[in-house]
Amino acid sequence: MKKCFLVLISIILMLCVLIGGCVQSSSPSTATPATTQTTHVFTPQQTQTSPPLRTCSLVPGPTQIVPEYESVSVTVNRNTITENPTIAIAFNGGLGLGMVTQMNVTIIRSDCVREQQNRNNPIMGDTVTLMGTTLTDRVIVVMTMTSGGQYTIIDKDYPFPPQVQ
Image (cartoon, rainbow, N blue to C red; front, side, top):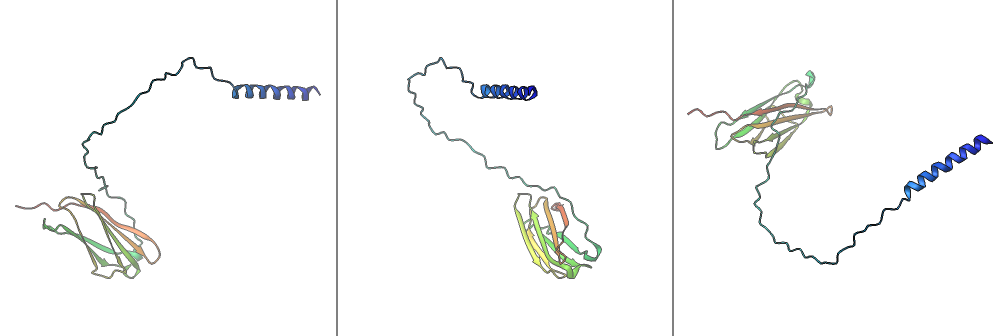
């Protein structure tokens, strides 16, 4: 009986403390609000804005090791003519020649323009040609195989060759 009474008293005390903390009134404010009216006049100002900075990653990422039975060869060539700085990506075949369902080529140019082209079921000699810049451009080649696997076989920066004068 005494144990039950002590438990009941302790529960009632906890509830009183809880209720007392939750219903505490805030102290009344002694400041009286002023009845003055203020008017804000906003005049538009011309601000000089600079064009937004374009950021892109020219840092190559990791590439995957393709199983030998699915291995293929791809060649990347840069045109050295400054008026037409194209990048040509050629599919050369390999053991996995008949296992490639798609060759996805992405170029991230130094001016942050991203270009992409695909070749479905590429055959030996298929080439993707995209416009590059006269600076360093990033080339990413991803192969999709009949097994469903996707392999990044090239992710590399290709600088424009220096001109000999």
